[in-house]
Image (cartoon, helix red, strand yellow):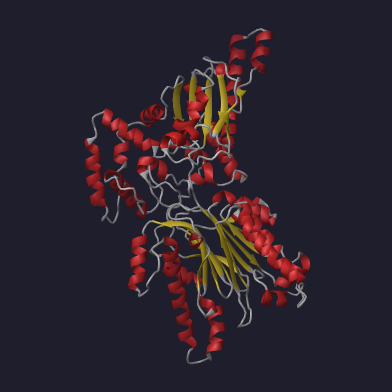
Length: 627
């Protein structure tokens, strides 16, 4: 419960479709920067480790710098970068050597006065958090059309294979990380496309004219077709070419999100719809989703089109986006989360033995509030049916009817997080004691020894916060029973497409399954599955052998064991953990079927290799990532 899970990064792209002078005259110099700030600020939930912004000026004469980039890992990184950009504008306004209202002069003398913007918010799933790991990345060349600026929300499962291909074509990559590898792969085919067009005109036109021909004829769809055919992973990748064209490419299963809006003034793209809504003021139904396996390609002149660059796979957009990561202000996500809570009602009623009078409902963290509202709406629906049943069948007295109608479920704010309390002590005993005080509770609202507490959360990943903090805290209220409810199903398998969940031993569901194997004298299956996972690494069509272990037990058996694992020592109240079913997850989110962390059904071949490798690492006690 409330275990910190780092997750998908955020991407933002802004393209001005008219000359800069138009915006200066109508809105002022900072128009584009303000829009870009909003696009990124409204996605700040997607990245707090670092931020980067790049800008390209289209059609600038030779001799002037036309690419600008700022990156930072400072605290409040979005404010830090845009304050720096704002100071540039303020300096321009005070510059008496030129005309700060003249777009041509501004573009020649000041950074971030271009028409194309690319921003990135980073959550580092692996690796050090330093500025060199912050997007956008820049691949520089003295030919404008060979410059490439890239940022993305992605992870590749086949990094080794992609790296080897770069070496095979003669490159000498400086790092073995997926961001650099992807950029160099795309960059290689950008160079190849440049060369193709250059060769086409080399005997007909002077080189300077060929440069303009390249910028007019370069085929970004062809570049992406060649670059991405070997990619295995989830990705939304955005790229800017030095001459002003840009693209946003989405993986063929639609794992990572990507949306855009266009009018006659701007094209905006972001990882979440609420950011676009805020920055553009458009209606939600005007925001479009980039089709999986397609790229939004924006030309130098501001024309745009979605073009397919790879064969589509069955749609598997990440359901964790709907459950937890994306902002709940998106109307679709709001309704889905509310439905997730509502669908839990039968399990919750069973867990409290249908005793609503002696049950108190609450939630943690704040992101679980919408699911909580859905749960309470479902409870109210149940009560309406029970009231009808009692009134129609038993024909109670007027006083009884009044009492029946007046009854409302009990709702309290029971758990609050003290964000100011930091667990800076590193030795385990003292750190665990401090962790237990990160949360606080509301006292004297529970009937001791009588009430059951129902607490809903988005998901339960590791169970550490439950054991070290939440349950101990709630037990001090002296309830009879505590029911912990997860709006997500049991997380059983590692993610390899962007979420920081790569080590199997960290999942409380995996630990529960291990305990059950031991209790049922089935531990020999671990070695059998280990051998299968080793043999499967070379399979062209791999399967998830780890699922064979989970199939030994029902969901209820694993949930019951989890309930035992997370209970701290000296716990007085009974504890039960209730999970969402996968079936109900799909009912709530019917258009977002990516459920591999729950079911082990991965959308790409690389996912199956990763889960088997993660199990091999577990058996070898190797504390390394599986991809």
